[in-house]
Image (cartoon, rainbow, N blue to C red; front, side):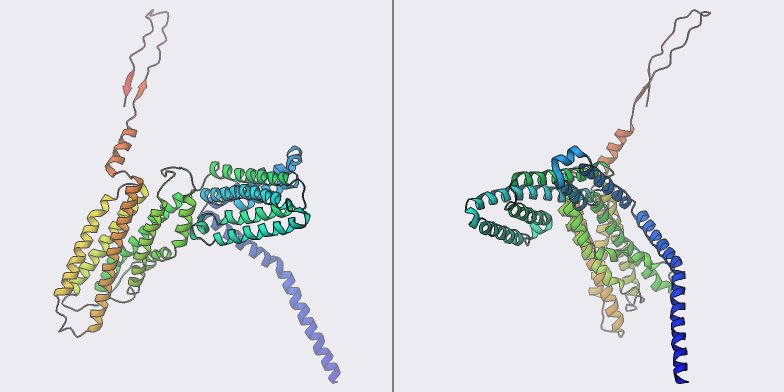
Length: 472
């Protein structure tokens, strides 16, 4: 009986496993379809967020297809042989989203290949003078010396930032040329083919990247700095309008999530440094010259982040009402609101001037008003007697908020100084000069000539051409 019961239970377990497996198998098409739909939605959203990503993908496909013709076209293949694959690999590795990044990698790869190939041929020639026994020893010594020195040089900050990829290709190419020369008889031909295919691949990347819908890192950096200033201004505007009004009315209908955009500013350092590095490689484009002071953008970004850190500390007080001793509460709120609003207006004016590349003179009045309010606040704090105050928490709360606002005003002044310095270095035009230039462009004088009148035989009058009429 026990054996029968055990056999029945085992068969039931097997049936349950088979049933579960069958259900999973039948639901697999639906699950696969759901996964594909989800991936399609994500891909569509990714393309809608930045359509340049779709364009970049098409550009990479076009460049790779063009370079592949070297392998498919027999006369070209006869010239390069299997080395044509180096051109394909160059496109895959070199082609980047930004023109500056593509140009940086292309020049690094081309110059490193040229220099390392020449040194590799020279090392092979010197090693061959030592005889068959000493040649591999000399080659090994040269490879060790070059790899050690080049790897150590990669630790220098400036080389690491701009030429790290070139140093890596230098190490690789030198080792390939010098070591393969020990077995290859035509080492010069090998080096020539590698250099030629790298140049073809890099040139294709540069031409497609610059001609077909170019994406400039300099423009993205310029807009990023202006956007970060706007995010700080939005928070300060919301703090002065929403938080202090809420402390009076007890209710606020504002959406505080709109004021949290400053959080993205806190982690923008690496993005700004990468964009500035790529922009330094880019040629003249649009409103930006070849030697545009991109490093000054990093200085502005650092000042903006210092302000964002103070704002992050101030953001912690949005969850509580504004507390201050009764004798100074009203005046403190007025001065804090004025400081916050004027700083917000100044940052918005700085952002607008930065976008249009004009001298930010319109921000000066707001900065002066914020400084005036800051001086009045400091004077109020010094002249107020705190001896009779029993609510110490209110004193600490008010002192903390006012101290943070004073620091924010100081940081705003530093941002304004950095933007003014950029305007001086880049020779931004004043608003009046730019308006005058636009006015001249709008004054277009056209000369309209009347059509000749066809004369009929009946009237016999000769055709007359009226004088040109100038129309403005």
